Image (cartoon, rainbow, N blue to C red; front, top):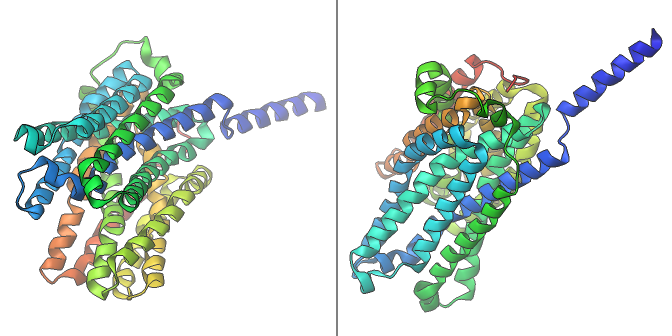
Length: 437
C-alpha cells in the first residue's frame, strides 16, 4: 500500500510540476512570439518618433507646423483601422491558425515601413506622396489591430497551464521594448547625423531598419509550431468567428472591453501625458520629465514578467483590482504633489507604472481565458481594439483639452473615474486562473 501511495504522490507531483514549468518548445514559442511582437511595435512606433523629421517631405512646403499636424493626423487615422484589423485578421487567425495570423500581421507592418522608406517626396510626385503615406499607415493600423489578438492567443496557448499570465506578460514586455527601441533609434540618428542628412535620408534609414527587423520577426514566427489549442479544433466544423463571438459570447466580449478601459486610459495618461503635464504645471524642462518617464518605463518592463508570475500564483482578480484600486487612491496625490524636480517626477511615474503592472501583466491572459479557441483571437482583438481607439486614443486629447481650458487640476478625476470603472469590472468578473483552454 505504501508503494502504491508513493507512486501516486509522485505522479501527482510530476503533473503539478508540468503545469508550472515551460518545456523547451514552449520557451521557444514564447521567445519567438515576444521578439516578433517587439519588432512589429518598432515598426509602429518609429512613425511617431520621426514624424517631426519627415513631415515636410510628404506635405506641401511653407509651413512646418501644418505639415507636422498633417503627419500626426495620418498617425491618428491608423487607430481607426485597428478595430477593422482586430475583426478581419482575428477571424483569419481563428480559421487558419495563430502562426499564419502572426506571419500575415508582421508582413503587412514591415512591408508598409519599407514602402514609407522608399516613397518619393512631395517635391517629386506631388499629392501622391501623402496618399502613399496614408495608405501605408492604414495598413499598419490594420496590422496592429490584428497583432494583439493573434500574439496574445499564441502566447497563452503556447504556455503551460500554470504559467499563462507569465507568458502573456511578454506581450506587453515586447510592446514596451519596441517603443524603447524606436526611441533609441531616434536618439542615435539625431545625435550622429547632421540636420540636413537626418531630414534628407536619415528618417528613411529608420523606416528601412524597422522593415528589415520585421523580416527577422517573420523568420522567427515561421519557425515555430502551431499551438495545440488551435490544432485540436482545426479539423472540426468551423463557423465564422466574428458571428460566433457576437452571437454566442457577447458577455465575454463586453468584459474584454471593460477590462481594457481603465488599463488603456491610465496607461496613455501616465506614459504619454504625464511628462507634458509635469512640464506645464511645474516648469520642469520637458527633456528632464521625459528622462524620468523613460527610466520608469524600463523598470516597468522589467517588472512585467514578475507581475505575470504573481498572477499565476494568486489569481487575475486580486492583481488587477490592486491596479485599479491603487489608482483610485493615488490619482489625487500624484497630480497635486508633483514638483519641479527629477526625483519628484520619477517617483510619481514609477509608482504609477508599478501599479499598471497589475493590468499589463494580466490583460492578455484575462482576455484569452474568456473565449474558447475557435473564437479566441477575434474575441480578444476586436473588443480590445475598439476600447483602445475610444478610450486610449482619446486620452491625450481629453487631457490636453482640460489643460488648455484651465482644468488641468481635474485630470486626476478623469483617472480616478477610469480606475473606479476598473474596480467594478475586476471585482465582478469571474476568476479564470486555472480555467481549461
